[in-house]
Image 1 (cartoon, rainbow, N blue to C red):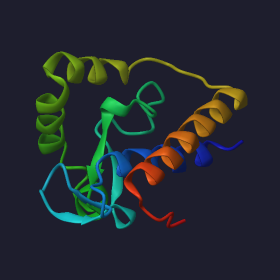
Image 2 (tube, rainbow, N blue to C red):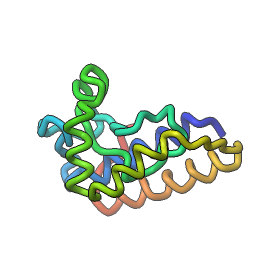
Image 3 (cartoon, rainbow, N blue to C red):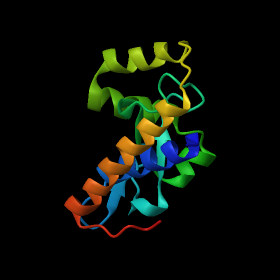
Image 4 (tube, rainbow, N blue to C red):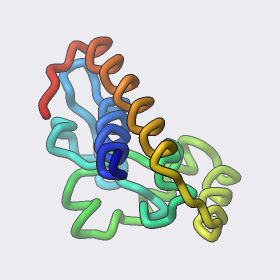
Length: 132
């Protein structure tokens, strides 16, 4: 299984977690509301850092403008995560980016399967139609 499959379901899960029952969520960095199917899973510590790539506390719903064009508005994203999880957690995320993590194909498959299941549960719970 490819990393992209795990990334896809992890992204869906983060976005759906932030959605209301109408599929609407709020960007954590600019406050704009939108349908989560058109928004992004923004990583505070970039997803190139494997130690935090699939860490739910590292991720938040972001509009595409903030996530892609404004480099995630790191200052605003950090403030959001501190409010949500506390300063200690954010400091641990920041320190974790220096850790080396290597995942096997089986690890990636397990991550993908886990988040696929959690995503499907959220779709059903919130009565949101699958869009992919």
